[in-house]
Amino acid sequence: MTFLSEGIIKTLQTNHQSIATAESCTGGLLAYQFTAIAGASEVFLGGIVSYTDKIKHQCLGVPKELLECYGAVSEPVVRAMLEGVFRVFGVTYAMATSGVAGPSGGSAQNPVGTVYIGVQRYGLEPIVERHLLTGERKEIQHQSCQIALERLAKISKFC
Image (tube, rainbow, N blue to C red; front, side):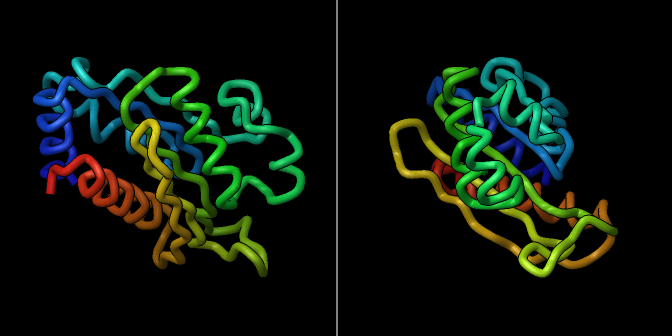
């Protein structure tokens, strides 16, 4: 992951762009991947760990109706989280994750390992994907971050 996060940071620095995150199931791991890179403060403005519905609503402005209708682990909620990142931070790129890392908390609709990952460049359509990952909790969190960084690298033209 370090290679990707370093490349993304350098690309954003070169292009005078910025990024911020909204994380649920990854619990700040994406933000960590960026802040572990020297000089990241030039482009990484911050992150919100919106682990509960209350924080998704209060800090990111995710409508309660979306949370009630679709649940936190859903494409519409991740799209709203991305919108919240742009609203709060005013960045070029936004990333968001929401999922069920386990070992409990899964359902028939969203079993353990279900993760929605969203990336977006401001003004363009978001890319939101549903993944069904396997492994222990930490493995699911790390896989989620890896996928998110790969998607961001692609849209930021790092690779």
